[in-house]
Image (tube, rainbow, N blue to C red; front, top):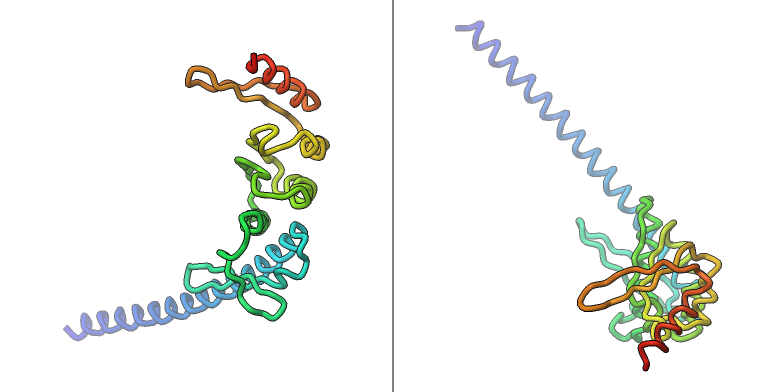
Length: 204
């Protein structure tokens, strides 16, 4: 009986040591997670701030960006030059889209993952100045593959398309007929000329 008791006691002691080691390891892991979150937080702040400064023509409008991480929830504050929080609802539709654009770019950069980005209705809320910035600064750098779905002449003008052309690899016209869609591949330089031909055909 004594031998069995000693064995059981030794097992309990061994389990306690394992438990203590596990607790210490978990503490170190949690500290490491907090450290990584903080590092990513500052990196993300910097990326969003740089993106906004590149895209917005109101240079002093958003002076800084603050990322708040509580547990697994992330919140982002936009700050003016007096360090006051800017109400995102007070932003114009174009400014809100610029913020979303800068945030998307920052998240893609920080993820370190290469994946295609699909953007529907590009440039819809932007004025001409912001559209030029988006075309020259954002689309060429957000990802290795970017796919845009614009309504020609409504969401993308021919002049804006000319700015895009140096970075384009392929162009397509989407046809919607009798509830079905089909793609027609075109040379990059002929997208608008072919679109105008088709528009003239359907106009009569």
